Length: 144
Image (cartoon, rainbow, N blue to C red):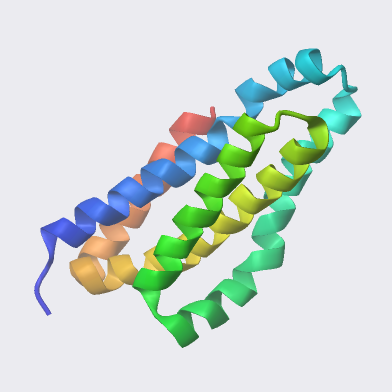
């Protein structure tokens, strides 16, 4: 199968969204501490909710992808992520933030499970390795 530039661009866009949502958590925490008057421990639980969702949803995401295929699972993960963000925007509060961050984290875990095989199909084996290296480099630079 030949390379699909459209699919490769779509995969890069999804990786960008995942990185943006994952890395925006740190800068938001000080505002949440001030706005909701919570301790550092309570704020840490928000980040915990996001990242524990990765662990909880990674294996079920594989089962979802096997049953429903990549496209509907990807669409639903974007819907869940959007609903989580909207819930926090419309009903700001610590409890809503906790649930919405878990929902967004679960959606990002599902997206990651869906996108990596999609990248392999879209770009071929050599392109997949190159793009994964670029993504790892981007994540390393972005996090430092």
